[in-house]
Image (cartoon, rainbow over all chains, first blue to last red; front, side, top):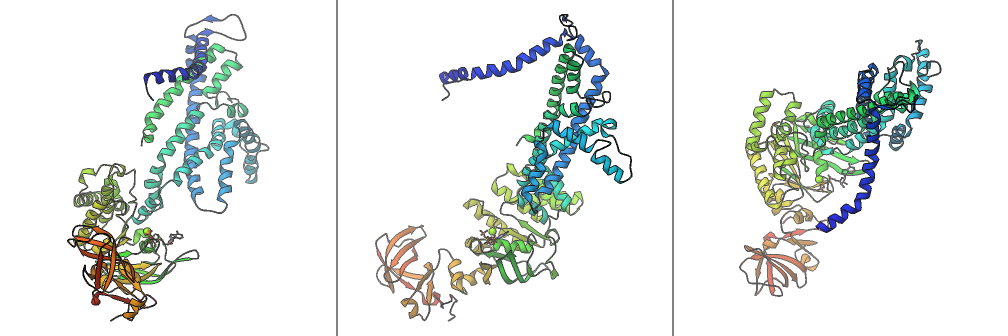
Length: 290
Length: 334
Ligand SMILES: Nc1ncnc2c1ncn2[C@@H]1O[C@H](COP(=O)(O)OP(=O)(O)OP(=O)(O)O)[C@@H](O)[C@H]1O
Ligand SMILES: [Mg+2]
């Protein structure tokens, strides 16, 4: 029914939702760009004035920005590394026939349903706390000095917490991919004299490459904007050691009340995310082609 | 030397005994076909030989060497799967060279063997394609190529042609037979198509419910079936069976006669009946006849015999090609 007439009607009919969606996106983006060009601090209301690109200049030359940029990258890469490798290993394990398989699978998936603030608090208070934490208790058990994770390795701790909550997602996707592996192929490899490792690297891993790509793409999108875990554990500190771009923008606009600077940071974050996206699609996107 | 000996091999899946104790000798260079109805255990037996399934009991010797608990990769056997089981992310070249690479062979040697195999199997034009970009017949050839480069002691085929169309199947059948003539390697071939079995085999093993019903050359099985099952299974179209009075005349519980072993006439003969359907193939005509006292039968007559539906015809069995069976279905020897 692709006559000109029906096409025009169709366009007319979908236009409200498209206009709404567009407005939903364009208006906040436009406002942010507009604010980013103003000198606008909530501590001195009514004194807004146009400053051109000054906010961007300040933001991009701020040493905190570079720290946040590298922290963001380390955070994303670290979590990706842990979840992809851990996910593959867990998926391999869960694919083995075993007693209580259904229950074990649900248990493995559970962390994904714990909301970020809660999981971060649990980790902070129950595991990583240098006095009452489980890790401290373990360390003392072996006669070692408890380690204050959040003070001395804040970024690593956050990576650990975030990886913990994303591991189930990776495991689940990789497991479904593993289960779709043709049994005949494995048997053919057996006949061809391939050992366990050879089978994994030559058959299983290439088979999973598409699922791994999906995991990397989806996780990267979410990991670029990690916020809750940082807020409830380290608050970006000590110093800027665990501040990522999202947290930096938050601290500029809501802790230092610099709306202009925060907006400029937000726009920079959008641009960075798009750069990352382009790279990702270039690097791994071709895996998704049939 | 590559003979395979199975002794008292049993295969059970839990309680279910798929293969009861079974002995089988496969000699060097033989083309052996396992044939039997669906679910009779052909694939299982082949997989036990290959090592993909463990034998529950019994022993397997390959080249006089105990191989019962050897992993599949060490038995020196190569297998062509029904689904081909090519590695989808590897090019044809990589697929074929995979077993050699696993064996740690030198790259130059690998290349020369792969090129040689590609030439023999007419794969040179597709060598850099992925399996997904090949036709069924080409995939089949890649699967065979992956086997021949290893120079295995024996080839195992599990219904390799069942995914191909009729014309291609005839072609590949010839190619595999030729391959066997050239390589002179032992081959074990599983099929439920008795035409494939008859045309390719040196030795046919007829299986039913895991039991070996008869082992022999194609013509042996055709001419001297040991029992009613083999008689009915081998030969196309199927043998006609009759029991009751007519069998009693021949001192048997039942008798069997092949459609091609009856002399037919429109005037007189031993049995008479009415043609229900006449299938004209040109060279021959197959008549589905309802014989007066005996019931339905199939009779082959020359293509130029003028008969159509409703005609009365007469058929006379050739006595020396009539098979007699006792109550257990065993053949009564003359
Ligand atoms: N893993 C298994 N567990 C339990 N039973 C099995 C298993 N594999 C096969 N069987 C049973 O063993 C019997 C023989 O199976 P097999 O695959 O060997 O048959 P086949 O002769 O190859 O039949 P087809 O011609 O249909 O391929 C079947 O009844 C099947 O249900
Ligand atoms: Mg089978």
